Image 1 (cartoon, rainbow, N blue to C red):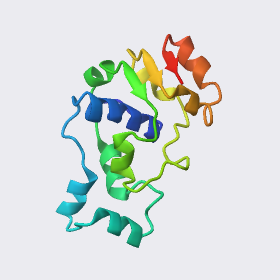
Image 2: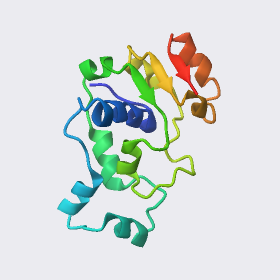
Image 3: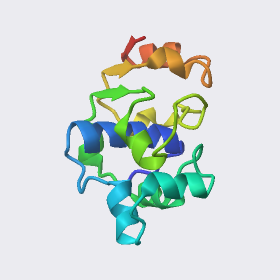
Length: 145
């Protein structure tokens, strides 16, 4: 199984496979997960415990343990880095997108998605990976704002 070095890069792959392509199942829902633990009002729980600007431990544990097979990784042709990604909302349900919580810090995991052709939101990567555009283009990956 693939081992990701950058948790946030893995989340971009999960976004594509689980929430867009729907090929990585079951679809994770933090609300369902927390409801199973007896927490019915997720937003109140987050606010009462000052968890607004962090990945909930339950979500982090789930996505860190989540194994993604090589066949699914090979099916990834597009990644999107956008503050509105569903996977981000599952990790931090009241996150406002105004900080670097989900910034990708490394593109070392590109080798795990060998058929990647397009990267949407690539310009945002340059805040934490200055040579991101050049790295992507050198691999033949189309970069879109």
